Length: 172
Image 1 (cartoon, rainbow, N blue to C red):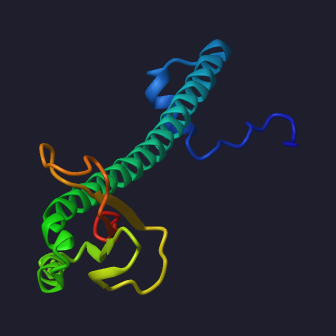
Image 2 (image 1 turned 180 degrees about the horizontal axis):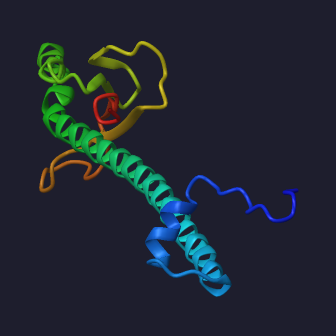
């Protein structure tokens, strides 16, 4: 407590708020409005901060989901393209052509594994740069089926192509 007759101690920002909100006026009503104004400014500032942090977190979650969907789409596209290209060599059991087909994807750093298998599950060609199973890897599989309009068993898979993509570059 202060001894009677001495003014209460001033807080650090009191002069700033008094100059900003009082404009030279004095009195108990004015001081109440200054306190109200200070609380209002601090409350609005805290609310803006909370909303900003929340929107930043929401943006990060949405970006992660977008990257994962993009990685799935790329993996599916590569697997389907390789499956279409592998139909004839796999049907003819042309291993050198299948190896050449798999090696065409080797320069793409995002593709860490590609495997071309027949219907029995025997691997005919492929490569793998998998270090370990990472949650950032996206696996895509596509059946090797005859193109539309071909005679023979329509839609019966003669094999499959599995592609594993790494999202390491996308998650940076």
